[in-house]
Length: 293
Length: 219
Image (cartoon, chains in turn purple, cyan):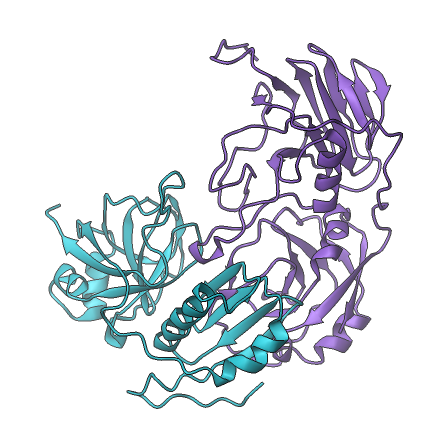
Protein backbone atom coordinates (compact mmCIF):
# COMPACT_ATOMS: atom_id res chain seq x y z
CA UNK A 1 0.00 0.00 0.00
CA UNK A 2 1.42 3.35 -1.01
CA UNK A 3 1.08 6.06 1.57
CA UNK A 4 -0.65 8.97 -0.11
CA UNK A 5 -0.26 12.39 1.43
CA UNK A 6 -3.71 13.75 2.01
CA UNK A 7 -5.05 16.85 3.64
CA UNK A 8 -5.50 16.39 7.34
CA UNK A 9 -3.33 13.28 7.42
CA UNK A 10 -1.74 14.52 10.64
CA UNK A 11 -5.10 14.97 12.30
CA UNK A 12 -6.05 12.34 14.90
CA UNK A 13 -6.61 9.14 12.97
CA UNK A 14 -6.14 5.39 12.79
CA UNK A 15 -4.75 3.73 9.67
CA UNK A 16 -6.06 0.31 8.68
CA UNK A 17 -3.23 -2.22 8.35
CA UNK A 18 -5.33 -5.43 8.29
CA UNK A 19 -9.09 -5.05 7.76
CA UNK A 20 -10.00 -8.62 8.79
CA UNK A 21 -12.83 -10.63 7.27
CA UNK A 22 -15.34 -7.78 7.56
CA UNK A 23 -14.87 -4.68 9.66
CA UNK A 24 -17.29 -1.78 9.46
CA UNK A 25 -18.00 1.51 11.19
CA UNK A 26 -21.11 1.25 13.38
CA UNK A 27 -23.12 3.38 15.77
CA UNK A 28 -26.77 3.35 16.88
CA UNK A 29 -27.95 3.47 13.25
CA UNK A 30 -30.28 5.65 11.22
CA UNK A 31 -33.72 4.80 12.60
CA UNK A 32 -36.86 6.69 11.63
CA UNK A 33 -36.34 6.47 7.85
CA UNK A 34 -37.85 3.04 7.11
CA UNK A 35 -40.70 4.73 5.19
CA UNK A 36 -38.09 5.85 2.63
CA UNK A 37 -36.64 2.35 2.33
CA UNK A 38 -33.63 3.15 4.55
CA UNK A 39 -32.58 0.25 6.83
CA UNK A 40 -31.81 1.10 10.46
CA UNK A 41 -28.29 -0.41 10.40
CA UNK A 42 -26.04 0.15 13.46
CA UNK A 43 -24.09 -2.17 15.79
CA UNK A 44 -25.49 -5.72 15.87
CA UNK A 45 -24.40 -6.26 19.48
CA UNK A 46 -25.63 -2.92 20.73
CA UNK A 47 -24.85 -3.55 24.43
CA UNK A 48 -21.22 -4.31 23.51
CA UNK A 49 -21.05 -1.14 21.40
CA UNK A 50 -22.48 0.93 24.27
CA UNK A 51 -20.13 -0.64 26.83
CA UNK A 52 -17.08 0.04 24.66
CA UNK A 53 -18.10 3.68 24.32
CA UNK A 54 -18.83 4.06 28.02
CA UNK A 55 -15.42 2.69 29.03
CA UNK A 56 -13.75 4.89 26.39
CA UNK A 57 -15.49 7.99 27.77
CA UNK A 58 -17.65 8.43 24.67
CA UNK A 59 -21.37 9.10 24.32
CA UNK A 60 -23.41 6.02 23.28
CA UNK A 61 -23.87 7.25 19.71
CA UNK A 62 -20.10 7.58 19.03
CA UNK A 63 -19.01 5.38 16.12
CA UNK A 64 -17.07 2.19 16.87
CA UNK A 65 -15.59 -0.52 14.67
CA UNK A 66 -17.41 -3.85 14.39
CA UNK A 67 -15.19 -6.79 13.42
CA UNK A 68 -16.22 -10.23 12.17
CA UNK A 69 -14.41 -13.31 13.56
CA UNK A 70 -10.88 -12.38 12.51
CA UNK A 71 -10.40 -8.99 14.15
CA UNK A 72 -8.58 -5.99 12.72
CA UNK A 73 -5.20 -4.24 12.95
CA UNK A 74 -4.67 -0.47 12.89
CA UNK A 75 -1.74 1.89 13.34
CA UNK A 76 -2.30 4.92 15.54
CA UNK A 77 -1.40 8.35 14.15
CA UNK A 78 -1.95 9.95 17.54
CA UNK A 79 -1.87 8.94 21.19
CA UNK A 80 -5.27 7.41 21.81
CA UNK A 81 -7.22 5.06 24.04
CA UNK A 82 -9.09 1.99 22.79
CA UNK A 83 -11.61 -0.34 24.42
CA UNK A 84 -12.38 -3.74 22.86
CA UNK A 85 -15.67 -5.44 23.81
CA UNK A 86 -18.11 -7.96 22.31
CA UNK A 87 -16.54 -11.19 21.12
CA UNK A 88 -13.45 -11.88 23.31
CA UNK A 89 -10.23 -11.66 21.29
CA UNK A 90 -6.52 -11.22 21.98
CA UNK A 91 -5.56 -7.52 22.03
CA UNK A 92 -1.95 -6.53 21.32
CA UNK A 93 -0.23 -3.15 21.19
CA UNK A 94 3.08 -3.40 19.31
CA UNK A 95 3.01 -7.13 20.02
CA UNK A 96 2.54 -6.77 23.78
CA UNK A 97 -0.64 -8.35 25.23
CA UNK A 98 -3.18 -5.78 26.40
CA UNK A 99 -6.56 -5.91 28.12
CA UNK A 100 -9.83 -6.86 26.48
CA UNK A 101 -12.91 -5.16 27.90
CA UNK A 102 -10.93 -2.29 29.42
CA UNK A 103 -9.35 1.00 28.35
CA UNK A 104 -5.92 0.53 26.75
CA UNK A 105 -3.48 3.32 25.86
CA UNK A 106 -2.19 3.18 22.27
CA UNK A 107 0.74 5.55 21.64
CA UNK A 108 1.15 7.35 18.32
CA UNK A 109 2.86 5.04 15.84
CA UNK A 110 1.91 1.85 17.67
CA UNK A 111 0.22 -1.10 15.99
CA UNK A 112 -3.06 -2.16 17.62
CA UNK A 113 -3.97 -5.72 16.71
CA UNK A 114 -7.25 -7.38 17.68
CA UNK A 115 -6.91 -11.06 16.81
CA UNK A 116 -9.35 -13.81 15.94
CA UNK A 117 -12.24 -14.04 18.40
CA UNK A 118 -11.86 -16.94 20.84
CA UNK A 119 -15.64 -17.23 20.84
CA UNK A 120 -18.49 -15.15 19.53
CA UNK A 121 -18.38 -13.34 16.19
CA UNK A 122 -18.23 -9.56 16.52
CA UNK A 123 -15.81 -7.46 18.56
CA UNK A 124 -16.26 -3.69 19.03
CA UNK A 125 -13.42 -1.16 19.16
CA UNK A 126 -14.21 2.23 20.69
CA UNK A 127 -11.53 4.92 20.40
CA UNK A 128 -11.61 7.99 22.65
CA UNK A 129 -13.48 10.58 20.60
CA UNK A 130 -15.07 7.96 18.33
CA UNK A 131 -14.58 7.31 14.61
CA UNK A 132 -15.35 10.66 12.98
CA UNK A 133 -16.24 9.82 9.38
CA UNK A 134 -18.93 12.11 7.88
CA UNK A 135 -22.43 11.06 8.94
CA UNK A 136 -24.99 10.09 6.30
CA UNK A 137 -28.61 10.77 7.25
CA UNK A 138 -27.57 11.26 10.86
CA UNK A 139 -25.47 8.12 11.26
CA UNK A 140 -21.93 6.93 10.53
CA UNK A 141 -23.01 3.29 10.29
CA UNK A 142 -22.07 1.13 7.33
CA UNK A 143 -25.27 -0.32 5.88
CA UNK A 144 -24.29 -3.37 3.85
CA UNK A 145 -27.78 -3.88 2.40
CA UNK A 146 -28.30 -0.48 0.81
CA UNK A 147 -24.71 0.80 0.68
CA UNK A 148 -25.23 3.88 2.87
CA UNK A 149 -22.41 5.11 5.10
CA UNK A 150 -18.70 4.38 4.76
CA UNK A 151 -17.52 1.31 2.85
CA UNK A 152 -16.27 -1.69 4.82
CA UNK A 153 -12.66 -1.19 5.88
CA UNK A 154 -9.80 -1.81 3.43
CA UNK A 155 -6.07 -1.83 4.09
CA UNK A 156 -4.71 1.73 3.86
CA UNK A 157 -7.94 3.45 4.88
CA UNK A 158 -7.41 6.32 7.28
CA UNK A 159 -10.16 6.73 9.87
CA UNK A 160 -10.37 10.16 11.51
CA UNK A 161 -10.95 10.29 15.26
CA UNK A 162 -13.17 12.86 16.97
CA UNK A 163 -12.24 15.02 19.92
CA UNK A 164 -12.62 13.12 23.20
CA UNK A 165 -15.39 14.59 25.33
CA UNK A 166 -15.12 12.39 28.43
CA UNK A 167 -12.56 10.44 30.43
CA UNK A 168 -11.88 6.76 29.76
CA UNK A 169 -12.53 4.41 32.69
CA UNK A 170 -9.36 2.51 33.51
CA UNK A 171 -11.17 -0.24 35.42
CA UNK A 172 -9.80 -3.80 35.63
CA UNK A 173 -12.64 -5.37 33.68
CA UNK A 174 -16.30 -5.01 32.88
CA UNK A 175 -18.89 -7.79 33.06
CA UNK A 176 -19.92 -9.09 29.64
CA UNK A 177 -22.23 -12.01 28.87
CA UNK A 178 -20.44 -14.99 27.35
CA UNK A 179 -21.41 -15.79 23.76
CA UNK A 180 -24.08 -18.46 23.75
CA UNK A 181 -23.50 -22.24 23.62
CA UNK A 182 -27.16 -22.57 22.67
CA UNK A 183 -28.95 -19.58 21.21
CA UNK A 184 -32.25 -19.37 23.08
CA UNK A 185 -34.57 -16.81 21.56
CA UNK A 186 -37.90 -15.67 22.93
CA UNK A 187 -40.41 -15.14 20.14
CA UNK A 188 -43.68 -13.22 20.24
CA UNK A 189 -46.00 -14.81 17.68
CA UNK A 190 -47.38 -12.59 14.90
CA UNK A 191 -48.26 -10.91 12.69
CA UNK A 192 -48.47 -13.88 10.28
CA UNK A 193 -48.21 -17.00 12.47
CA UNK A 194 -51.61 -18.07 11.12
CA UNK A 195 -49.98 -18.63 7.73
CA UNK A 196 -48.19 -21.69 9.16
CA UNK A 197 -49.48 -25.01 10.45
CA UNK A 198 -49.11 -25.19 14.23
CA UNK A 199 -46.51 -22.40 14.27
CA UNK A 200 -46.04 -22.25 18.04
CA UNK A 201 -45.60 -26.01 18.52
CA UNK A 202 -43.43 -26.36 15.43
CA UNK A 203 -41.10 -23.58 16.57
CA UNK A 204 -40.98 -24.86 20.15
CA UNK A 205 -40.06 -28.39 19.13
CA UNK A 206 -37.80 -27.81 16.14
CA UNK A 207 -34.02 -27.87 16.50
CA UNK A 208 -32.29 -25.32 14.31
CA UNK A 209 -28.67 -24.30 13.93
CA UNK A 210 -27.17 -20.98 12.85
CA UNK A 211 -26.49 -21.15 9.11
CA UNK A 212 -23.13 -20.09 7.64
CA UNK A 213 -25.15 -17.86 5.27
CA UNK A 214 -25.92 -15.51 8.20
CA UNK A 215 -24.76 -11.89 7.92
CA UNK A 216 -25.59 -8.37 9.14
CA UNK A 217 -28.98 -8.60 7.46
CA UNK A 218 -30.20 -11.78 9.16
CA UNK A 219 -29.31 -14.85 11.18
CA UNK A 220 -30.36 -17.64 8.83
CA UNK A 221 -31.12 -21.09 10.21
CA UNK A 222 -30.75 -24.68 9.07
CA UNK A 223 -33.36 -27.15 10.28
CA UNK A 224 -36.87 -28.45 9.63
CA UNK A 225 -38.95 -26.14 7.41
CA UNK A 226 -42.15 -24.66 8.79
CA UNK A 227 -45.22 -25.82 6.87
CA UNK A 228 -47.34 -23.17 5.20
CA UNK A 229 -51.08 -23.37 5.97
CA UNK A 230 -51.87 -21.23 2.90
CA UNK A 231 -50.25 -20.74 -0.48
CA UNK A 232 -51.46 -17.15 -0.70
CA UNK A 233 -48.96 -14.55 -1.85
CA UNK A 234 -48.17 -11.88 0.73
CA UNK A 235 -47.99 -8.31 -0.58
CA UNK A 236 -44.80 -6.69 0.76
CA UNK A 237 -45.24 -5.23 4.24
CA UNK A 238 -43.10 -3.38 6.76
CA UNK A 239 -40.89 -5.47 9.02
CA UNK A 240 -39.22 -4.70 12.36
CA UNK A 241 -35.85 -5.50 13.89
CA UNK A 242 -35.97 -9.07 15.21
CA UNK A 243 -38.75 -10.13 12.84
CA UNK A 244 -38.57 -13.86 12.07
CA UNK A 245 -39.36 -14.08 8.39
CA UNK A 246 -39.97 -17.45 6.78
CA UNK A 247 -38.90 -17.47 3.11
CA UNK A 248 -39.94 -20.02 0.50
CA UNK A 249 -37.61 -22.71 1.91
CA UNK A 250 -39.52 -22.64 5.24
CA UNK A 251 -36.44 -21.97 7.39
CA UNK A 252 -36.85 -19.03 9.78
CA UNK A 253 -34.47 -16.10 9.43
CA UNK A 254 -34.07 -13.52 12.20
CA UNK A 255 -33.71 -9.96 10.92
CA UNK A 256 -30.75 -7.97 12.27
CA UNK A 257 -29.87 -4.27 11.89
CA UNK A 258 -29.27 -4.21 8.10
CA UNK A 259 -32.63 -5.88 7.37
CA UNK A 260 -34.76 -4.62 4.46
CA UNK A 261 -37.54 -2.24 5.52
CA UNK A 262 -40.25 -4.32 3.83
CA UNK A 263 -40.54 -8.02 3.07
CA UNK A 264 -42.76 -10.22 0.93
CA UNK A 265 -42.56 -13.37 3.05
CA UNK A 266 -44.70 -13.92 6.15
CA UNK A 267 -43.25 -13.00 9.55
CA UNK A 268 -44.15 -15.76 12.01
CA UNK A 269 -43.02 -13.84 15.09
CA UNK A 270 -40.67 -11.26 16.55
CA UNK A 271 -37.60 -11.86 18.74
CA UNK A 272 -37.35 -9.12 21.41
CA UNK A 273 -34.46 -6.71 20.87
CA UNK A 274 -32.59 -7.72 24.08
CA UNK A 275 -32.14 -11.25 22.63
CA UNK A 276 -30.57 -10.03 19.38
CA UNK A 277 -27.10 -9.32 20.77
CA UNK A 278 -26.67 -13.02 21.51
CA UNK A 279 -28.01 -13.84 18.03
CA UNK A 280 -25.36 -11.57 16.51
CA UNK A 281 -22.63 -13.38 18.47
CA UNK A 282 -23.74 -16.95 17.64
CA UNK A 283 -21.35 -18.73 15.32
CA UNK A 284 -22.51 -20.91 12.43
CA UNK A 285 -23.51 -24.33 13.78
CA UNK A 286 -24.71 -22.96 17.13
CA UNK A 287 -28.00 -24.69 18.12
CA UNK A 288 -31.02 -22.38 18.08
CA UNK A 289 -34.13 -22.84 20.21
CA UNK A 290 -37.21 -20.65 20.01
CA UNK A 291 -39.48 -20.00 22.99
CA UNK A 292 -42.74 -18.84 21.39
CA UNK A 293 -45.39 -16.99 23.38
CA UNK B 1 -58.55 -9.77 15.12
CA UNK B 2 -61.76 -8.72 13.40
CA UNK B 3 -63.19 -10.61 10.42
CA UNK B 4 -62.67 -9.22 6.95
CA UNK B 5 -65.18 -6.57 5.90
CA UNK B 6 -64.10 -5.44 2.44
CA UNK B 7 -65.23 -1.91 1.67
CA UNK B 8 -67.75 -1.79 -1.16
CA UNK B 9 -66.29 -0.25 -4.32
CA UNK B 10 -66.81 3.47 -4.55
CA UNK B 11 -66.93 3.87 -0.77
CA UNK B 12 -63.31 4.25 0.28
CA UNK B 13 -64.50 6.07 3.42
CA UNK B 14 -65.41 2.71 4.92
CA UNK B 15 -61.87 1.82 5.95
CA UNK B 16 -61.99 -0.98 8.50
CA UNK B 17 -58.48 -1.61 9.71
CA UNK B 18 -57.46 -4.97 11.14
CA UNK B 19 -54.70 -4.78 13.73
CA UNK B 20 -52.05 -7.51 13.93
CA UNK B 21 -49.50 -7.83 16.76
CA UNK B 22 -45.80 -7.33 15.96
CA UNK B 23 -43.58 -7.98 18.97
CA UNK B 24 -43.71 -5.77 22.05
CA UNK B 25 -43.67 -2.29 20.50
CA UNK B 26 -45.17 -2.51 17.02
CA UNK B 27 -48.48 -3.04 15.25
CA UNK B 28 -49.29 -3.96 11.67
CA UNK B 29 -52.52 -2.41 10.45
CA UNK B 30 -54.07 -4.11 7.45
CA UNK B 31 -56.69 -2.78 5.04
CA UNK B 32 -58.13 -3.96 1.73
CA UNK B 33 -56.82 -1.59 -0.92
CA UNK B 34 -54.09 0.85 -1.87
CA UNK B 35 -56.57 3.73 -1.49
CA UNK B 36 -57.41 2.56 2.03
CA UNK B 37 -53.68 2.38 2.89
CA UNK B 38 -53.26 5.97 1.73
CA UNK B 39 -56.23 7.12 3.83
CA UNK B 40 -55.03 5.17 6.87
CA UNK B 41 -51.46 6.45 6.46
CA UNK B 42 -52.65 10.06 6.25
CA UNK B 43 -54.78 9.59 9.38
CA UNK B 44 -51.84 8.02 11.26
CA UNK B 45 -49.60 10.98 10.32
CA UNK B 46 -52.28 13.43 11.51
CA UNK B 47 -52.53 11.65 14.86
CA UNK B 48 -48.75 11.44 15.22
CA UNK B 49 -48.41 15.16 14.51
CA UNK B 50 -51.09 15.83 17.13
CA UNK B 51 -49.02 13.87 19.68
CA UNK B 52 -51.45 10.97 19.95
CA UNK B 53 -48.98 8.17 19.11
CA UNK B 54 -46.47 8.36 21.96
CA UNK B 55 -43.09 6.80 21.25
CA UNK B 56 -43.69 6.00 17.60
CA UNK B 57 -40.40 5.87 15.68
CA UNK B 58 -41.38 4.36 12.33
CA UNK B 59 -44.55 4.63 10.22
CA UNK B 60 -44.11 2.38 7.19
CA UNK B 61 -46.87 2.14 4.58
CA UNK B 62 -46.80 -0.80 2.17
CA UNK B 63 -49.16 -2.46 -0.32
CA UNK B 64 -52.01 -3.32 2.07
CA UNK B 65 -50.58 -2.37 5.47
CA UNK B 66 -49.09 0.35 7.61
CA UNK B 67 -46.51 -0.66 10.23
CA UNK B 68 -46.09 1.39 13.39
CA UNK B 69 -42.95 0.73 15.43
CA UNK B 70 -41.60 2.07 18.71
CA UNK B 71 -45.04 2.48 20.31
CA UNK B 72 -45.17 3.07 24.07
CA UNK B 73 -48.66 1.55 24.43
CA UNK B 74 -49.38 -0.74 21.45
CA UNK B 75 -52.16 -2.65 23.25
CA UNK B 76 -54.15 0.54 23.87
CA UNK B 77 -53.70 1.65 20.28
CA UNK B 78 -54.71 -1.81 19.02
CA UNK B 79 -58.00 -1.47 20.90
CA UNK B 80 -58.57 2.11 19.77
CA UNK B 81 -57.60 1.87 16.11
CA UNK B 82 -60.62 -0.10 14.79
CA UNK B 83 -62.88 2.70 16.07
CA UNK B 84 -61.10 5.45 14.11
CA UNK B 85 -63.01 7.43 11.52
CA UNK B 86 -60.68 7.51 8.54
CA UNK B 87 -61.57 10.00 5.80
CA UNK B 88 -60.56 9.08 2.24
CA UNK B 89 -57.60 10.82 0.64
CA UNK B 90 -58.72 13.28 -2.01
CA UNK B 91 -56.82 13.40 -5.31
CA UNK B 92 -55.42 16.89 -4.63
CA UNK B 93 -53.84 15.96 -1.26
CA UNK B 94 -50.06 15.92 -1.14
CA UNK B 95 -47.28 17.78 -2.98
CA UNK B 96 -47.06 17.34 -6.78
CA UNK B 97 -43.74 16.61 -8.48
CA UNK B 98 -43.18 16.65 -12.26
CA UNK B 99 -40.55 14.26 -13.60
CA UNK B 100 -39.20 14.65 -17.16
CA UNK B 101 -38.90 11.32 -19.00
CA UNK B 102 -37.35 10.25 -22.28
CA UNK B 103 -39.57 7.34 -23.27
CA UNK B 104 -36.95 5.12 -24.92
CA UNK B 105 -36.85 2.09 -22.59
CA UNK B 106 -35.78 -1.37 -23.73
CA UNK B 107 -39.23 -2.86 -23.06
CA UNK B 108 -41.24 -0.06 -24.70
CA UNK B 109 -42.54 -2.26 -27.54
CA UNK B 110 -43.50 -5.10 -25.20
CA UNK B 111 -45.38 -2.70 -22.91
CA UNK B 112 -47.14 -1.06 -25.88
CA UNK B 113 -48.35 -4.50 -26.92
CA UNK B 114 -49.53 -5.39 -23.39
CA UNK B 115 -51.36 -2.09 -23.06
CA UNK B 116 -52.73 -2.11 -26.62
CA UNK B 117 -51.60 1.46 -27.25
CA UNK B 118 -49.55 3.09 -29.98
CA UNK B 119 -47.78 5.47 -27.57
CA UNK B 120 -46.74 4.28 -24.12
CA UNK B 121 -45.38 7.78 -23.48
CA UNK B 122 -48.75 9.37 -24.06
CA UNK B 123 -50.60 6.76 -21.98
CA UNK B 124 -48.09 6.71 -19.10
CA UNK B 125 -47.79 10.50 -18.91
CA UNK B 126 -51.56 11.04 -18.97
CA UNK B 127 -51.96 9.57 -15.49
CA UNK B 128 -51.34 11.27 -12.15
CA UNK B 129 -49.65 8.84 -9.79
CA UNK B 130 -49.15 8.75 -6.04
CA UNK B 131 -46.22 7.29 -4.11
CA UNK B 132 -47.91 4.52 -2.14
CA UNK B 133 -44.80 3.37 -0.31
CA UNK B 134 -41.02 2.94 -0.57
CA UNK B 135 -38.96 -0.22 -0.39
CA UNK B 136 -36.45 -2.39 -2.25
CA UNK B 137 -33.83 0.37 -2.03
CA UNK B 138 -33.59 3.80 -0.40
CA UNK B 139 -35.75 6.22 -2.39
CA UNK B 140 -37.45 3.55 -4.53
CA UNK B 141 -41.11 4.55 -4.58
CA UNK B 142 -43.97 2.28 -5.61
CA UNK B 143 -46.32 4.60 -7.54
CA UNK B 144 -49.99 3.68 -7.91
CA UNK B 145 -52.50 5.00 -10.41
CA UNK B 146 -52.14 2.63 -13.35
CA UNK B 147 -55.53 1.23 -14.39
CA UNK B 148 -55.91 -2.55 -14.16
CA UNK B 149 -55.61 -2.96 -17.95
CA UNK B 150 -52.05 -1.55 -17.73
CA UNK B 151 -50.87 -4.06 -15.10
CA UNK B 152 -48.06 -6.11 -16.68
CA UNK B 153 -46.16 -9.08 -15.22
CA UNK B 154 -42.55 -8.50 -14.23
CA UNK B 155 -39.76 -10.06 -16.28
CA UNK B 156 -39.36 -13.82 -15.82
CA UNK B 157 -35.61 -13.25 -15.50
CA UNK B 158 -34.65 -9.97 -13.82
CA UNK B 159 -31.90 -7.87 -15.39
CA UNK B 160 -28.68 -7.98 -13.43
CA UNK B 161 -28.21 -4.22 -13.85
CA UNK B 162 -30.83 -1.53 -14.41
CA UNK B 163 -29.36 1.99 -14.69
CA UNK B 164 -30.21 4.81 -12.28
CA UNK B 165 -33.13 6.89 -13.54
CA UNK B 166 -34.76 4.01 -15.42
CA UNK B 167 -38.56 4.47 -15.49
CA UNK B 168 -40.35 1.14 -15.26
CA UNK B 169 -43.69 -0.63 -14.75
CA UNK B 170 -44.68 -3.93 -13.09
CA UNK B 171 -47.98 -5.15 -11.69
CA UNK B 172 -50.06 -2.28 -10.38
CA UNK B 173 -46.99 -0.05 -9.99
CA UNK B 174 -44.74 2.30 -11.88
CA UNK B 175 -41.48 3.62 -10.49
CA UNK B 176 -37.98 4.95 -11.09
CA UNK B 177 -34.79 3.11 -10.13
CA UNK B 178 -32.92 5.52 -7.82
CA UNK B 179 -29.52 3.93 -8.49
CA UNK B 180 -28.05 1.09 -10.55
CA UNK B 181 -29.41 -2.22 -9.26
CA UNK B 182 -30.78 -5.56 -10.41
CA UNK B 183 -34.41 -5.31 -11.44
CA UNK B 184 -37.33 -7.23 -12.89
CA UNK B 185 -39.62 -4.37 -13.92
CA UNK B 186 -40.25 -3.51 -17.59
CA UNK B 187 -38.25 -0.46 -18.68
CA UNK B 188 -40.11 2.25 -20.58
CA UNK B 189 -37.86 5.31 -20.23
CA UNK B 190 -35.31 7.23 -18.22
CA UNK B 191 -35.09 10.48 -16.32
CA UNK B 192 -32.28 12.80 -15.23
CA UNK B 193 -34.16 13.62 -12.04
CA UNK B 194 -32.15 12.61 -8.96
CA UNK B 195 -34.48 10.30 -7.05
CA UNK B 196 -32.22 9.78 -4.07
CA UNK B 197 -29.46 11.96 -2.59
CA UNK B 198 -28.67 11.36 1.08
CA UNK B 199 -26.97 14.78 1.30
CA UNK B 200 -30.15 16.53 0.13
CA UNK B 201 -33.16 17.47 2.27
CA UNK B 202 -35.38 15.63 1.58
CA UNK B 203 -33.14 12.77 0.48
CA UNK B 204 -35.96 10.98 -1.35
CA UNK B 205 -37.84 12.73 -4.18
CA UNK B 206 -40.57 10.09 -3.93
CA UNK B 207 -41.77 9.93 -0.32
CA UNK B 208 -45.08 8.24 0.53
CA UNK B 209 -48.03 10.50 -0.27
CA UNK B 210 -46.25 12.55 -2.96
CA UNK B 211 -48.17 12.95 -6.25
CA UNK B 212 -46.17 12.45 -9.45
CA UNK B 213 -46.67 13.41 -13.09
CA UNK B 214 -44.30 12.23 -15.81
CA UNK B 215 -43.62 14.74 -18.58
CA UNK B 216 -42.36 13.38 -21.94
CA UNK B 217 -39.23 15.06 -23.29
CA UNK B 218 -37.47 14.46 -26.61
CA UNK B 219 -35.01 11.50 -26.52
